[in-house]
Image (cartoon, rainbow, N blue to C red; front, side, top):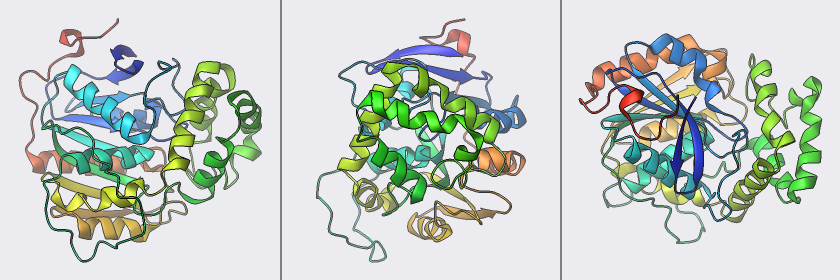
Length: 322
């Protein structure tokens, strides 16, 4: 893994290098970049794939005490990551909470257009969800993720956000239960998120069990989610103004992220296509990596967003450690 120092702290990231189309892959809560390993293996060497480990509970280094770990704050870290590595014509790919972060970035890049009648008005705060604008994103792939009012999502998300109200030490004790496979496979844990990924989910929980700084960061993320449950509803109103191409990939049998939300997103976005994937739960990169890799390859080929000359090997980029 490479490392880079951002304004909120140090993060790790995987980078395959190369001069093909650039994909930046975003994971969800209590996950890390290994969510994408099987997908990346199928896309290289034809693509440059970067997968940052976001401070969402499975990272290995605690962030700065004053870092903004709300989801808009994490979205700004992603944009800073793109800027620091000078990436252009990027395809953002977000699964689970990574898809929510991608939507916030899309909202920040949206032109101010009239709100479509099919976007429901809900009684939420008028505070903006927009992040800083960036021109580096050419397209977005949303893979079974939070959307509209499903935030936090399902039993899994609501249980985790409720546990985040505990002090970090007690939160760590609560999370110790996930060391047991029968508990990890419950619907309130990873049981409805993946059909086949128990081994990797067992690794994801280790940092929050062993590192006080990671526990502190995780509870801060969860409390920020609890404090602003209308965040994605506000972002939804901006999405029709996003000018890039979009692919919506949804697990047909998803029990956490309603398939209807995938259809609504595809209808809402001006240049979007929906593909539903069989035999998968939310974490399509774990359950159906070959199918997802094929879709990403097709999307980037159609987009024609080949990497610019500055999108070269990681050895030439700032912030990389051997």
